[in-house]
Image (cartoon, rainbow, N blue to C red; front, side, top):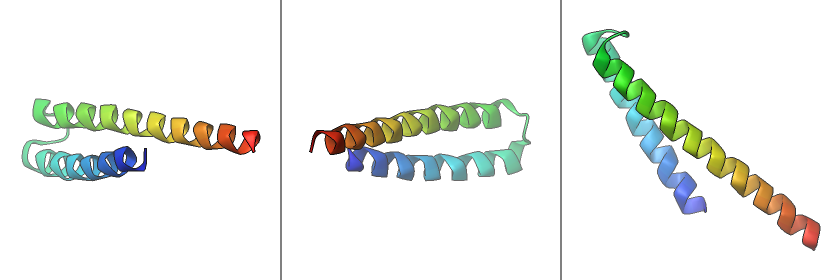
Length: 65
């Protein structure tokens, strides 16, 4: 699970850079900027779900011991 979270963190960082570059080049309301913003939102949502799953999984494991 940690590998998945680590990879997501790297991808999120890369998308943030792309979003900033695109926003500076084309403006914040351009189609390109909105595209990267939506992609980043999707990835952050997946990341948050993975963290929630990981936390819940740890809580359940702890309760069993």
